[in-house]
Amino acid sequence: MKNINVILFLLITTITIFSQEGKRIAITIDDLPTLSHSIIDSDEQRAYFRRILKTLENYNIKATGFVVGMLIREHTKDLLREFINAGHVLGNHTQNHFDLNNVSCETFEEDIQINQEILSDYQEKISYFRYPMLHRGNTDEKKTRILHFLAKNNYTVAPVTIDTDEAVYNVRYVKAFFAGNKNEADSIGREYLTHMLNKLKYFHIMAKEITGREISHIMLLHMNFINSYYLGQLFENMKREDWQFITLEEALKDPIYLMKDKYTGKRGLSWLERISGNFE
Image 1 (cartoon, helix red, strand yellow):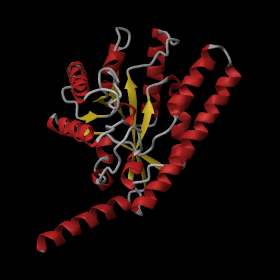
Image 2: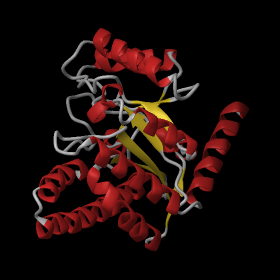
Image 3: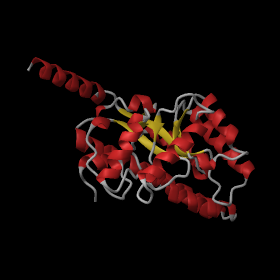
């Protein structure tokens, strides 16, 4: 009985501490080093990567970047070292960005290991893993096996509480920008900012409804073209709304990430949706 009381005391104390922290958020960036969409040339890929790196520096943000091995090319391989040298951390996002719904566990595990070998040339220890498309397995067997594999290989899964349709806006923006349609591109950029801020509010409210407190959020972004122009405006708006930027390591100390994942299925969901049981 005494041990149970101690555990309850520690849990309540931990939650109380986190409830006093305010609006905290870790920035994570998927699909490093760069995306070309068969439109963006190698010089511009390097340039947009560095614009994002500069924005992170301007806001004193230390991000975790999840690398897809097949995206590493001759013109981008040195960008990962620039990312690390700026104080950021690399994570594993698989070699081929396979959808776990559509491949075997063996194939998925091998893909993680191939990427791990590549990333070990850049960073001695790769601690974090993120599922492509946030797909964690469409069957209980697949979901459990991959989780066991990740734990055995000393990975910490990086969940996402702030999930958005940012990638959709990027595709539209890239097409308009490189077609020379400036007015259309500017309009898409404004839509993107509105969408991102609305999603922040939506998931912030959801988290408080689930836990009754402020949590340490984890936001999913991409190393993409639209962010190279609009990420600074997004961060500026977030600062005005009193968001504090923290690291992924700090965010994962929040006990919300120890809660049970209730979802098994094909969809890629926010961690908040997974633990709430609300899969609509």
